[in-house]
Length: 294
Length: 257
Image (cartoon, rainbow over all chains, first blue to last red):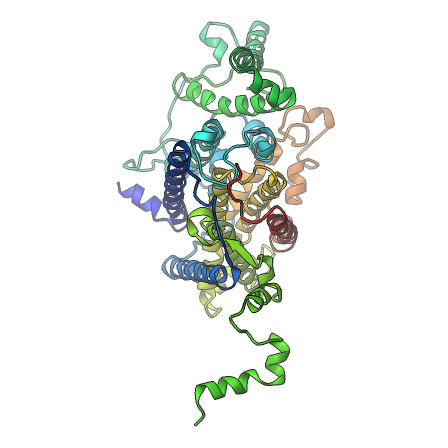
C-alpha cells in the first residue's frame, strides 16, 4: 500500500484525486436530477425549471457569482499553501525517466499506445474525438431533452457519451496515472515499482492464431477482410435492423448522418475491442500492411 | 465627529464619485437594470435571468468557474513573466529563484500550477453538464462547437506551460507528447505514407512544433510564446464569441418541449 500512497500524494497527482472526487460528485448529481425529472415526465408534470419566473441579475446572480469566486479563490489558495508545485532536476536529454509520462490529461491517449500504433493512438483517434464532439449537435436529432436533465428521453445519447467520457477518457487517465509504472507495466497499488522487471508476453497477430503468417499475402488478405468487414458490417448491420424495426428513424436521420454516426461509433468501439484482444487474447495486430498496422 | 450617513454623503456627493458611478443606486427596477447594463463587466449578463440560472443545481456555475480560473491564470501568469526568461540557460534557475528569492514566489507559482490543473478539471465538468442538460441542441449547436475548441485550447494552454520550468518532468512530457506529431500520417516522419512526400525528421510536423529535431532552446521559446501570447489571444477571442452566443441563443438553456 505504501507505494500507492506515495503515488496519490505526489503533488501533481493530488489534482487527479481532486478530479476523481469532483467528477464522481457531479456525475451523481446530474443523474440524480435526470431521474428526478424522468419521474416528473412520466407523471406528465412539468420538469424542473419549466415554469421559471424571472429574477433580477443585480443582485441575486451577481451575489452568487461573487460567493463562488471567493470560495474557489479560497480553495485554490489553501491548495497552494498546502502543496508545493514540484520542480524536478534540470532538463537532461541524456537521462530518460522510466516511465516517461505525458501530462495527466493526455494519459488516456498514451494508454492507447498499448493497443494502437502511434499514428492511430496519438493522431487519428484524438482528431476523431474532436470531430465527434463537434458533430454531436448535428447528428443528435432527438428534439427531446433540450434544456433539462433527463435520462429516459435520451438513453442512447447519454449512454454513448458517458461511456466515452467516463470510461475511455477519464478511467484511462486514472489508469495511466496510478497503475502504470516502469516500462508502462501494470502495477497494483500494493506493488512496489521494479525497474528491472520485464514481462514477457508472447503477443501474436490475429492471423497467426490460425497458423497464417500475418506478413504473408494470405495474412494480408485475411487481415484486410477482417478490418473491412468490421467497418462495412458495422455500417450495414444496424441499417438492416433499423430498416426492419424503425424505418422512420432512418428516414429522419438521412444517409449522411447515419454514416457519420456509425463511423464515429464503430471507431469508438474499436478501442475496447482492441483492448480485449490485446489484454485477454494477447493479440497485437489484426492487419499488417507495408505502410501501417492495425 | 460626523455620523456615518454624513460621511457617506460627503463621499458620494462630490465630482470624483459621480464621475465614476454616474448615478446614485436606489433600489428601483430602473437602477437594478442600470447597474447591469451600465457596467462594462456586468453587462455580459441580461438584466433579468430565469430562476434556474441563479440556482446552483442546474449549471453548477462551471462555465463561470472556468472563466474565473482563466482570469486567475492570466493574472498569476503575467506576474510570473516578470521573473522568467525563456532560455535554457536561465529558465530553470528562474524557477529556483521563485522558490528562494522572490517574495511569495512559491505561492505565486503554486497558484498558477494548481489553477491550471483546476481549470482543466472544471472545463471538462462544464462540458459534461452542457451535454447532460441537452444544451447543445438547437439553437445552441454552434456554441457547443466553440466550446469544443475552447476545451482543446485549455489542454494546449496547459500542455505548452509544462515545458517552461525546463525540468525533467516538463522536458520528457513534451518529448512524449510531440513524438506523437512524428507519427502523423503523411506529415510526420514516422507516420504512414510520409516517405512519399520525402518527409524527414528535419522537415516534418514535429520539427515545426519544436523548431528543431529535438526539444531544445527553440522548443522552449515556441512553447513560451504559444503559452503566453498566441493561445491566450485565440482563447480570448473564442470566449468573446462563446459568451456572446450564450446571450444571443437565449441565455442559460431552459426546458424546450
